[in-house]
Image (cartoon, rainbow, N blue to C red):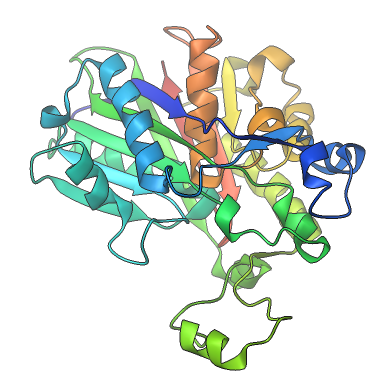
Length: 336
């Protein structure tokens, strides 16, 4: 069996910065209110006509491939994690294959929201381990801004989310190396599906024709719903469990962690986990303050930024952990 490694990482952030003060023109909110609840100071929104989930993913992928020393022609498979695809179908994976001029390699789309990148890395790891592929491009990219309710009604959700993309090239590690992905751990519990969801348009009961026919100005079925406190309470428990699961699987202790990259859902969740595990500020990387919650893009963006800042070095033990809609959650343990 082979071993996989993260060979290169990259990120793309739209230029358009939206501060908490900027949001006051759309809804009754304040910088203090948002920071107190989420830790977010600003986020970035994609250009409505020039930037898409795919274009941002492609931009991040080019950086990741360059850093990995891999060309588009060498990529054997694409895994794209997003909840905000350019089209209802096909998914953005095939659009990446097209836009990067790749061979007719397979493309897989992951619909696991905030856990999407962790799930995608886990799938890539299995393909590399079995020897089926040598180089896999994994992307997490989101454009939330076009689907948010920018009114007082939607502010509890809308102030949280931002746009962006991150990517990684997962490759076969050199024989005999200790570096690479040590293990991945995935979970789901669908009884909580309606606590964080966007139901319409969907084939489960409410399609576009129903929304148009009703013409109801108070219709919230096509807007994201989040039971914030319920999500928070579950998140802090599952984050802790899945981090511990990853450490135990590799006979490691919390003290062995050099860098924890948590999904950037809410700074308060990350701080709770940091305090629970008694980790120092140097052992946890957060950048939600600048980007908001970018769902499937948050972990690769944070991982890339931490590495670019020299906070992740060769030999470090890196743990990535995520929790989100579904509920789904997971972790990845890596020796860098």
